[in-house]
Length: 246
Length: 251
Image 1 (cartoon, chains in turn red, orange):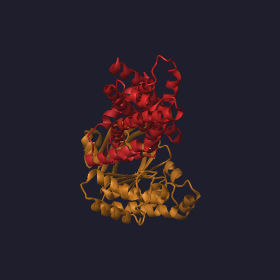
Image 2 (cartoon, rainbow over the protein chains, first blue to last red):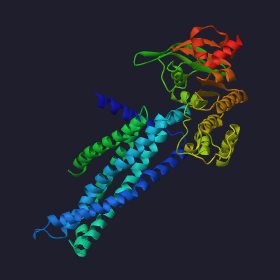
Image 3 (cartoon, rainbow over the protein chains, first blue to last red):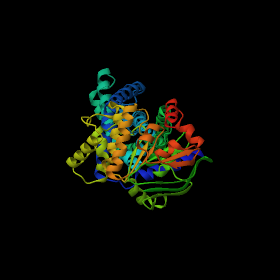
Image 4 (cartoon, rainbow over the protein chains, first blue to last red):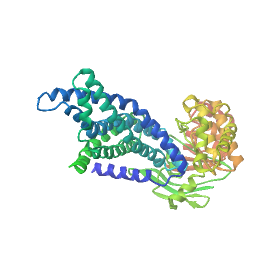
């Protein structure tokens, strides 16, 4: 029954967050601020992870495709499809759930325990709208950009490390990544990225917003935010794959 | 003027406030005192709508707060300034941005006008050359002064102060007390102060309400509180040796 209680409370918070803004210009400014913090601030980690993921997939694929019946360009196909279909949208979102999610939950949780949210409410400001909505919108707008960035760097990383280690040739890799390319796969990845972005921003925000107590509880909210958003990302990964690819 | 009519509030079946009735007058410093856990902060939170009440009525110049719709409540909240115990300044904003914040949200002032208003409010609380500092760089007294500047930036009709001098040295406490008193008279606002500090009560208390175990136990002014023979109040007021000596001399 507790699950339904949290679901109800979560949806009420989201409903409040999407209420009419007090001042549109302030909210637009907040969205750009959050895009800078949550999105631009994550470019570095996304770049590092993507390059290494692409490299590892290349080497592992080449190792597994030892049979002479499988052409070597299959390595390029494997890297491309793995990055586009799963690694860039899902794994990057899981990493962001840890990085961005904990930051959102602890920021809002600290504001709750230090009465900053009460101060907003007393000023007559919709605190859920002011704090949560810009994070959700910024995340939904920027996460797909991060995912495209990750796809590009992953495939590039695979290319560079594939050539350096000599497991694949320049021609075979390029041929592989262009072989029977389906643009719909990118659309599918971007839909997943947008849904995951909503989860990454809203679930930790919920845990932060309803923090009560002190520093210990802020830490707990942060952990809960990351754990629940990660589990939901995996669940929605399965649901969206079934809906969009099956 | 704020009228509190027969307010009751309980948490998980445990009564915290029992049938509280009081009138907080405009242009006066109204003080709520009582032991820790007596329900003072709960009363304050009920008055500003952070806590729902179980029964009763809160009237802001005749407007019943809890009978209003969302818009009506929001309109009243825009007339409220609040000084929290810890200041509740926004960590990510500078002193100036903290004071400018309510102006950005609720007025159409230009950037220059907002900055001028913020500077005026900061000077009013005797805080100069601190505009670009962050809350983490301020002392406790400076934080309270910034919080007062933020509260008066939008010219509130009602000012709530939750233990404004907790954690401050006696000299800074008097500065904050006097500031609250001056602002109350200067802007003719209704000020409600929660405090444990008897110096503040004697210094600025025009109307005083004593809460004991969730009930309004006594009301009067700063002269009457020193003369009362009510045992619970005497235990509270003359808890320190200093106050006991003062009472002996007074008698």
